[in-house]
Length: 303
Image 1: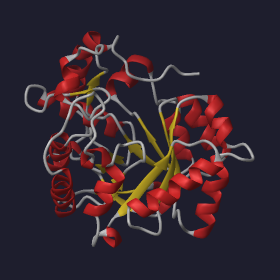
Image 2: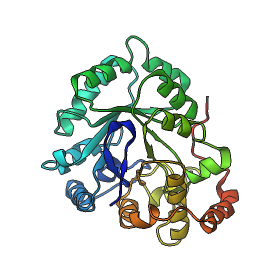
Image 3: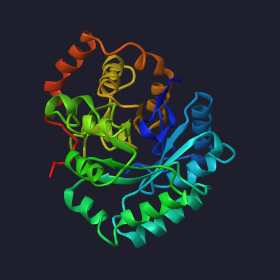
């Protein structure tokens, strides 16, 4: 596993991170999982640890992922960096949620605690009001319960407002080939985050396009995903090119799609993804695909 400096946090994080959705029993497209998911999560986490993955990311909104992941990490907590999130924008509910997260994850601290899913200027401003969630973020940071703090966002404008308003240390954003090529999504955020020394995580690096309506067969095939990932076999070359493209934008680590197959692929092909830079031939593959999917963007409408 390759390890990269994670901005001003001083951490060295694995180039591939573990997304907590992999551990959840819940799906997000109305399909049912069967079997021992705790046992499955234990196996997934063991594979991640044995492969050198040291950054684990989870959130209360990922079904029962906190419970499953927390149990799977028992005995290994001091070996990894654990990131959690809150999509609450007020102090009181966020405080209750953070307490529950600590309990479910069997820990007394977060290595990174993030405002989750900022998608508008209005909700970002709400977070900074006197009774907003930023009051909790400050308390957790001062007490050491949050070793580092950051944001995740789907709106570039909201992300920029947030990091211009506070000394956040990390940002998780969809640095995705399709969105960047089609709209320049992320091109304003990345240099700003770099100038502030932030650790930068890339999500959606394995995604081809958004789902095409409720009846898209891809929803059933990848029930833990909010959008369609590349096929691991039929689209392998495109997938490698897409991940290299995300890497080329300047991220420090990539968080794969939410199923174990894509996570395993990312880990097993980390050397190739983080080896030589993206080639002109790989960029040409993505350029040829773009006209087919450019109308299937999955980004939030910028405000």
